[in-house]
Image (cartoon, rainbow, N blue to C red; front, side, top):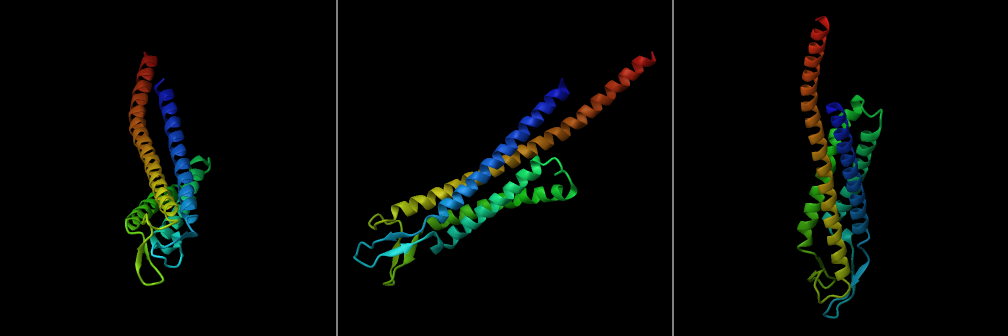
Length: 201
């Protein structure tokens, strides 16, 4: 029974790990797509100045968020493949998985942090040389842009959290199994000795 329970727990934790990775990959793709489409938002200056189009590409951290989420999604996808692939227990996959598990959340957290820092000062230099706030309520056509980029940032943060959750589950699983294996091996050896001792008598 203990062996059966451990096998079931191992299967459940592995399923949770894969589910968290899949969720993280989907969120990363959604964040990148949402940010990349936050463009062609024409704003009209309240002082009668010429209309100006602001896109996510006007802000470096937003571009970094799109690229980082896209790369992280690919990394997570590769990690999922290696985790479920029966032949993925080779030396190269064992060496690659830890790198992917570290690189993906690092990209997501760094890109999300940079984007959040930039969102506090969303502005651009207008044609007349004045610095204009993109999210100024007095400007037309900017509310959708600001809402979209902020939603993309929160989704990116959720993707980073999902990757971290998957890593926690993975580490918990490995630590529990290694501890359980050592105990179970000791108990099994003891039981075997007892059985052998009983047979001799």
